Length: 630
Image (cartoon, rainbow, N blue to C red; front, side, top):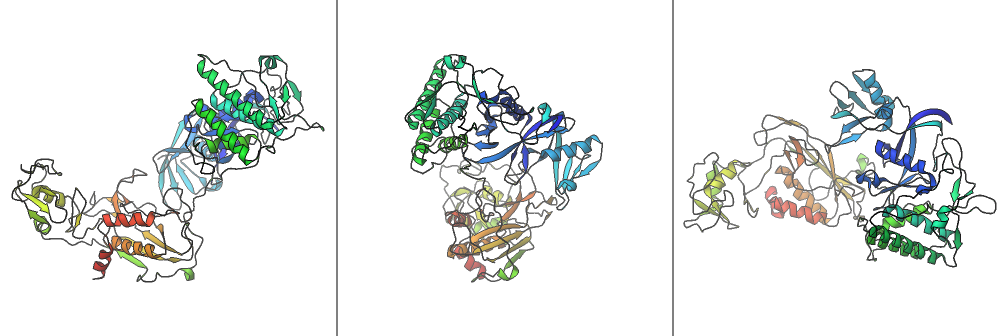
């Protein structure tokens, strides 16, 4: 115990083992629930203070955060910091992530940065607290000591985190209010979500105590609460929880559950019918003391899996009927017609019962396979070499645009009364193109030999001049490719080999690993901004394909795409918004080895077929492989 003043910061544990702070507003909300004591039900609905956190509920008894739409449970904690530190002054330090949004630093990191900032240091090295970053206050930037990558940082003011004084415990449990016993009972929150949480806890406690139910009436609310000895850590030591005054036993625990559901449904319907809320209810009942005077722990011995699912379905129907927004999730068994909130409600039910059960654990991102030694890496049978390089622009040019187009077009003497889909003028009228004028008459019309689409020759020449000018042409209507299409991929290296590990969904074969490596450089004449530097983020990039017949076919076609410079391009990143950087070029790759959290991993039974379709759209087919050999 420590007698002092401190600011309270509530934090949650992410999948990387880092404690991430809730916002000051959320921390104030949680503290308000704690001060309310047992009548608040011991659960914190975060959506009441932040709409973005509407799926989340914190159970203060188990100190866990529960996500209703997925069932994911994460630990939470209540931490104390010096009032003169950053959280005590409302100072938040944030860094700009790849999506262009701002992410707050962990609280310890933010406090360290703020301390150096107040001391007017020009910069601070975070190596001493386990991070290989330098914060430069003159440029307000974060520099990675290993990669030298820079990110923007900012300092902003927010609410001050809640301040507490008195005896501060090292660990905190609910309830913590020293005046919880003496505080008179007041109407709890009557929103449908809170009613739902408290009704579940009441039903579970009733079922666990051999069918005991709780009746709520005006007489009960007027009676003084009876207290049972129950110890809990608080700011001043221990306190007692009130137990309900009237407890009526029933012959059937299931009947009590049904009664609780009916009560909730009637309460919600009355709440909707009334112009002002007139509901009164009690908090969740505490378990009665056993013969030795200790409080017994609630359990679900009287509810089997079938009853759990039946209760969850009934609760979800009540939730839907009450008009509470619900999130569609997968069914627990795949057969029930009730989709909304089923997994979430079942999770709340189990959490309220105090069961140490987690419906799902936070999935882990598995980008790379287990370590592979050099002796385990093998070449791929049927494919020569293990590396390809591109060093310069590999294109086949015609002498002039007119000569290139002449190979693919037929002249049309009597154009139909249709629009040219390039300039949107009638084919029977001159071309409407207003840019640099090609050396052809604006009223000439040509027909592409394979697909039959017709355009002004003037428009086709202009389109060709604005493209890669590699001797190929792509129909702007149907995307049919004439000639050999090449891209603008900058120089780099492509490695490929076999590793002795299997991908999820392809356990019957090994894996082909592809490693792309493109360094930053200067844009050439075929790029968006010739002469300007371009960046190359995230290289080397590792990609994975199953080593089966179709996978090897995909690899052969990817090698053709690499040689034709079609895998990457230079442009603006759709994820970071950065311009003049190397980006993927419409041929999807799988960059996750053992998971599929981002959609770029396995299992994905349709991936190989989808990527074959994307390669065909780039003009790369099995015939292309034969052409490359020739």
